[in-house]
Amino acid sequence: MAHISITGLNSTTLSLSSSRSIDTTVTQSSSSELQAALTELSTSIVKQSDSDILADSTFSLTRPKGDPYNLYEDQPELKELAKALAERLDGPVHEANSDHFFYQDSMRDFLRAGVLTDPEFLDMATSMSDEELADFAVTIKAMMLPASLNYTSHNEAERSYKDKVAEFVNVLKDSNTTDRAAILNRSADYANQVDVDAAVSFEQNVFGQTLTNFKFDPYRSDTSANNLHNYISAVVTTEDPAALTQQLDNMSDEAQKGLLNIYGLDTELGERLSTLIGTEGSNVPASLLSALGDMADSVKVAFITSDVDKQFGYSWLGDEALLKDNEESQGRDFALDAVSGMITTLERYDFSQEQKETMGSELSHLSNPEKRAYIEITTIGLDDMLQSKVDESFNKKNLDEAIEVVSTLRSNQNVLSLVNGARYHDVTLIERPDIEEGQTVVALEGAAVFKDLNTAVRESRVLLNAFPERVNMVNGHSVKGHESENLYSAKSFDVYKQDVNNLVSTLVAFESMRGDSTAAETASLDKFAETLTDMHSGIRDETLARVSEELDTGTIREKATESTQLAFFSSLIQQMAFETERDFRNQ
Image (tube, rainbow, N blue to C red; front, side, top):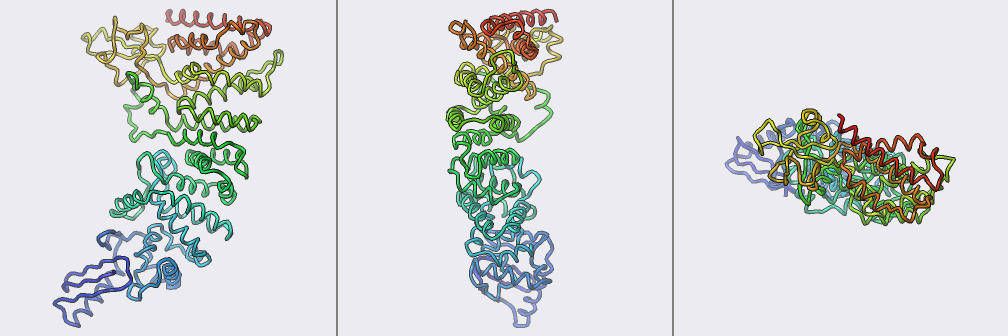
């Protein structure tokens, strides 16, 4: 009940709630004094500044720029449109509340969304059906709950809640009545997935403080509003919102979520994937869409980036080392790279539906780090065999033959682990001889261990969390000679991409040549993967960089026949490894 209580001529309090009637209680006031008080109250409402507050027990509103009160005073026709809208949604407006109806019930949500001061929206609302209005109301209310941080930090960095609603309203304005109804129906479906309790709690916490310029602040990692926000982000950027909406209508819930997650990750990637899916929504299997969407959903966002993060690396210890480091490395760059690589591959090659379903099924059973390794093998491997490293003088592979090679690699757990391990440097802990024994260590990454101490320390980062009491040290080194089995350090993204390209190219060359070789039965992919795994990362990365250069030149192809090229390739790797170790020792 809207309630005005005047308890004295020198203090007036206005309290608004949901009903349309007014009670007045007068104490210590004559009739003339009451009239004067009401006049003063009316004047104070009209003249309120942005900092004045209208409050009740559940909602405090700071009148922001764009508050409709004064606008409606100057343009009564807009007020009538808004009043008609309020009555369609909430029933008749009591005459006593006719100047303030937009602070109550559904109108409060419309006010927060900024649409009550948009003449074009108010005009459009007159042509909207009751169902459309209800769909719009539930959409903008649910949109108050942000998407999870991995989407919000990127998509809403420069966009407030009102901005996003305004962009959505523009889509509705530009749509015909049929398309508008379909878009609103779809947004309402996603809005109805939003956790009501979470939305109410968030609304009270945010709007109990201020309405002005409400931003999508960082929120918990998982939220029921992801589909809704990712859909809105998609329709406000796509060239054909109605076509996207129709496409989603043809897809399963699992497939919809996968596609929308990619839109949430990057709208351009979402558009490319949407094109691949086709108008019927069936050209890319739901399992593959879900697997890619899971990678976008798992992006980790650092709350704070400091100079310390840039100058120092992080080393993780023990059995949880890889898990923790993968959380650190499962950032936006890695997800973008994996998803865009897979989309490019789907665009580039004419896969059968069965081949796509196989990839989707296999990816769905892998962890996100393993998914990344799987995609690296697929994208780099197919490009090597069908694009960048093709030699006409040998048995050029077709798509099916190339897929057979990469399938062998990506279905081998040792190979997946090796490719995933390309993300890390091997680490060596050394005690500083110039500081008291046992007090300070330096953790050397990768090839730094092969250099003299001063050069190594100068060129290597200090790794936080690397302490001698947490690692078994023997003669100044970790227990496995010059590397540690329980200490990991993540490479930068650029270094990782360089190394993983060289590694996958080498694996693809080995498996491809093995299939053509007379020694295929005796050559073992597992043994080859183990040999590479056992190499110190510094030696392996440099060795495979040199091998990759040789593969690019076609030297092996020139010296060997198809049946003997594997032997030449094996010899090349041994030679490159020997030269790498020799060169490191001479530094």
